[in-house]
Each structure stands twice: as structure tokens, then as C-alpha cells.
Amino acid sequence: MIKDITEVLFDEATILGRLDILARKITAEYEGKDLTIVALLNGSVIFMADLLRRIPLPLQVDCLAVSSYHGTQSKGSVTFRQTPVADLSNRHVLVLDDILDTGTTLRTVLDHFAQDKTILSLRSCVLLRKLIAQPRKAEADFIAFDIPDAFVVGYGLDYNERYRNLPLVGVLGPEAIARYAGR
Ligand code: 5GP
Ligand code: MG
Ligand code: MG
Image 1: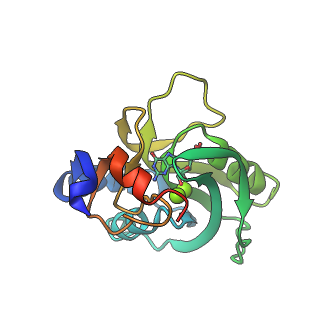
Image 2 (image 1 turned 60 degrees about the vertical axis):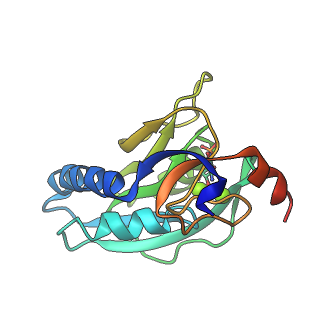
């Protein structure tokens, strides 16, 4: 698996070090507030697990399954594979995602929650933000890392459902992209 990675951007120790800092920021921001973290599946599972354990607040967690990517390209439309069950009334909501690219996913999810007028505040947090030339449809409030415009996998991020379990974030090489194309 690791041999398919042409460049390691962040190893596990680097990621966890950054999550310590991010978690302190989030903790300071939400101290004394009723916080619900909504993690977008499947990409943010590992990020969610490592980040949540660093936030010493009595928060609640929920997950929402969405998908917008096909292979290495954004489809431009977002599918909700399930709707959240938790009651978010009178709660501060922080949406977690693995990576912010065009912002289509985050925009769709934020618009969905913005319809609920009983939510006290709505913000977002991503592990990675891709530096792209075009304007984005949504921005994130908390960001762990900025990365170049390359297709990355690992630490929850997949290529056709593979590589989520790599304990690092890296650029996937062309051979692996060809090998697992469409399967
Ligand atoms: P957006 O909707 O912002 O264009 O894309 C966000 C979603 O696309 C992310 O939640 C992620 O699932 C997927 N995505 C975007 N860029 C990458 C990437 O470089 N690698 C992987 N594995 N997924 C990506
Ligand atoms: Mg995702
Ligand atoms: Mg994906």
C-alpha cells in the first residue's frame, strides 16, 4: 500500500501534533456551550476519532453519510446516504470533513443544517484544505493543514474505497490510480 504513495505529505506524528493544537482551539471556542459534532462519513472517521479524544468537553457526536467523489474527480453533486437522527435544537453544531476541495460537499451540508432555525451556531472543520485556483462554494472555520492541488489518500481518505487505513496523508501515484480505476 505504502509503495503506491509517491509523496508523503504528513505522517501520523505530524497529524496528531496538529490535532493537539486544533483541539485546543475548538475547546476554547466551545467551552460552556452545548456542542454537537457532525462528522461526514466515510472520509472523516479517523480524523473524527483522533480529534474528539483531544476535546475534553461534554460534547455529542453524530455522523452523516454523504458522497460527492467518483474516483479522483468531484461529481459536482452531493448524495445524502442517510439523514441525521440527533436533535440539534439549542445546540452549537460543528461539521467535520476530511478535505475541502471545491466546497460542494460542505456547502450542501451547511445549507441543509441552516434550514434548522433551532440550531444556535453552525461552523465547520476540515483536516485538509486543497489550494485550488477557482473560488470555493464554502470555506471552513477550522483547518488542520493546507495542501497542494493533488489527489491524496490515507488517514480516512480513499481512492475507490481503498487506502483509508494508511496512517498518513500522501499523494497517490498514477499506477495505483490506473490499477484500481472503477473497482
Ligand atoms: P468537494 O465537495 O469540496 O469538492 O470535495 C470534498 C469531498 O471530496 C471530500 O469530502 C472528499 O471525500 C473528496 N475529495 C476531495 N479531494 C480529495 C482528495 O484529494 N482525495 C480524496 N481521497 N478525496 C477527496
Ligand atoms: Mg468526504
Ligand atoms: Mg471518497
